[in-house]
Length: 219
Length: 219
Image 1 (cartoon, rainbow over the protein chains, first blue to last red):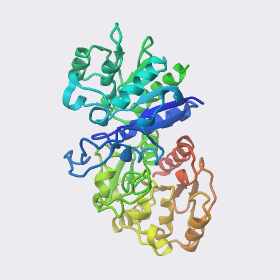
Image 2 (image 1 turned 90 degrees about the vertical axis):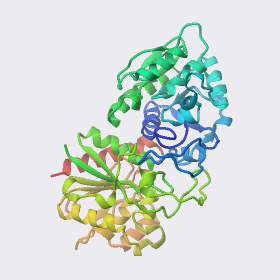
Image 3 (image 1 turned 180 degrees about the vertical axis):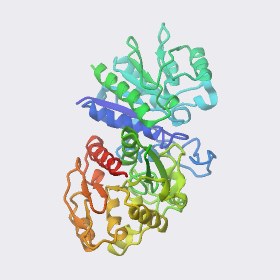
Image 4 (image 1 turned 135 degrees about the vertical axis):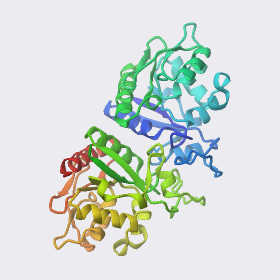
């Protein structure tokens, strides 16, 4: 059975992984006949957001501990992820991707990516295994893929974010919520999910398509 | 469009709503052509559990604020729920159902149900609108439905829990993860979900079936 690494960044769209994207990803991986293996960095959250009023809270939470809520405790520190035991990687969205997997939220085009994710991503990529990213997570791609040709990705249709990822060296493709963008050469698959979605069932169509393609592309 | 009230109890299987059950419910409601309207009690959590090691944490969280993570902030206090504006009610599982929607975790057969949920449930039930409950949540039914005939429910196949709900006056039916138990007279639909499931895709089959039946039973 193919093992698909899923990298989480907390639990909740405004300070972690987008919950609906994660659960739809885990469901789609099983339905594609593969197995999800979940990871998150064992670090303190940069921010904790009250999801009703959007205000920052003062309590301290850890990314790995909160992400464990999504997987009923079945999760491993990203530090222990081994590319050799995985057939592909998927990174759901949510603000955790730009707060905890990178500092894109503060640094934009000058951002850096979490060191453990950087290592894992590069190893998976070097082994020509497919990598899927959704929602805001594709902004990390130009920092992670060093290629002569710009890597083709989508973050949906948001003009400001498109400008930044193009400045970072990516080729951006406008994409509807129920579709995916595939860079066959780089083996990178992206879908806008909740960057564009207005309903969970719309996000599900794009996520299903991304997961099925990533599983098909495994070696 | 039919409006299905969904009552949440926090965010995470061990101290709130079971996340996978909630997201699968929201997806199934949309796919059945209905609209989910989410509520949670605006109360302090009885407990906060570290989902990696199962230990109690010392921080204080509120049920409504944490439940808002599941719905991207789109949630209302249970105090403001109006049965007249809803066509059905669904209550997902997770330990929040027995910590925050009731005190079943401590009091077992002598438990009482959150007053706001009690009121909403009784009004929906009196209006002959269908009610679906999954996982551990069906243990609340005998406290909420006063009928001469025992109400037929399932919590899966756990002998200890079955004994308690039978002591409370329910008729328990053993049920596999991909099926539902329907009490047509009382208009109560139940499915075991993660009381029995070992995979998210198995839980999804029972939850889909429950949601479709509840939506079909709306007036």
